Length: 287
Image (cartoon, rainbow, N blue to C red; front, side, top):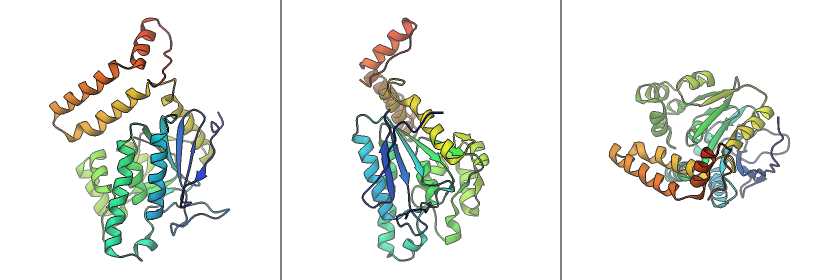
């Protein structure tokens, strides 16, 4: 088992998200807050509830990762070993105007869409419970990996008389299908990570302590860094999978052709094909 690849986390502006980059190009975004959505103090571990301030910090971290040419993969996780995120701060929602709540949801929609729109692979390391808005954040990632026996997932907003308004109804329906998504949301029931795996809501379920889990996720994510993977190809595959299902099939095929054409002119495609012919491991450069 490796170390954390030289990772050093530093707080974003509002001290609600920690950000750092490993020495092999993995950007880590760690949610970090108490139950009120305020910054953690020394010795605290978070349920990592989010406020508008945390969404601003997430936004800032995504943009930092997107514009850093050395970053090829983004890992999203939570502080501590109990929660990835317990969702939006109820204290905050109880204290703001309806107009603020609307714009809070709008900004959160825009922020989470950045995960899907960036060309870099986004992996969510679900180190604990991901409920309500916490699951909404996780569903914006490309791949979800959960720690076994560490938590549950669900969208229980029905119990508050509202719905999952930060992309929850839209993403859950697309990920697991209308019938089961509707049932989950109208009952407000939570499901185990094991059940979520069965519905393909998460991709992998791993054993281990919280520390082991974090190391294992970073090790696994390393396969998508240079020189191991052609990162332009990863980005174009992501774009086809994200955009294609929302357009007519023949348009999806046209998009796929254009993305492939762009890759054929890349140095990495030449390297990959040459390495295959020469029976050697390719050395991708991202060009």
